[in-house]
Length: 303
Figure 1 (cartoon, rainbow, N blue to C red):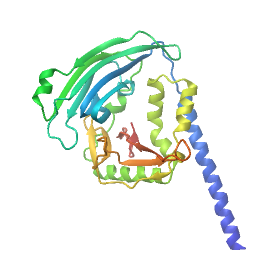
Figure 2: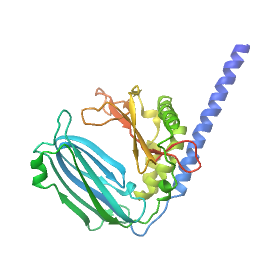
Figure 3: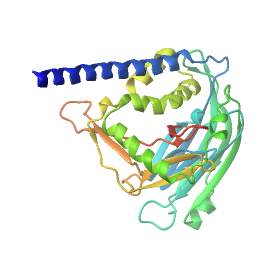
Figure 4: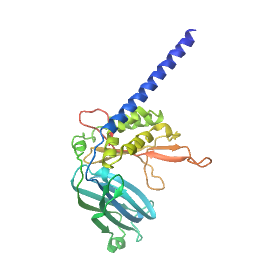
């Protein structure tokens, strides 16, 4: 009888804990929804890229935006609002390196970009596109077959928010090796145990900003929050050996695998999800977040 009572008590405790977990997550969601802002002007900045025959990395204000290994050609339009922390001069940087197993950029390498913005009208209509900068890789750069090419494009952006204090007040992480190691393992444990409450706590600030700078409606924000849970994970891959990459004067870090996949990515936290169509292969995904340490805090959060 004592055994039955003990099991029953454990079950009741688990039910209370689960309900508390769910309540705390709902409070976090409510806090994000209740702090939504409205703007009269809604500029939406993007960079349109055409690129081929190289590995490339795109950074804005020393914040990594996108990287990929392009063996043939690729066209993409990449949103930039999440990397513009305040109005004023911005710096777009692109790095080109040879694709895997090559020492130099080939004569097939190419890059063209068009940087600018549209004003969002109403909920989703786009106003006239306004160009801020344009670039075409010169033929002489292609002919030189360089081992590396880097370029910077400064431009002025006007946005209705100022989130610059986040990084201005963030702590230097270059001498926080123990904390960084703890964060790597802690985040993996959160994913492994599918602890959505702790995951939401780490993501809360990032989700607020994303909802704000992407001008999401209340309904879109609700969908973002509801979709961001860990129950989708079917299998979490073991962690590889990793390295730490620092950005923005050592205030942002990313944990990356030392092993590149076929697309040149170095994802550390990889997982599978059930297929969208029955009978198909599992889908694959990854978490590739940037982390920072807010002022007066002891735990890293997702940027």
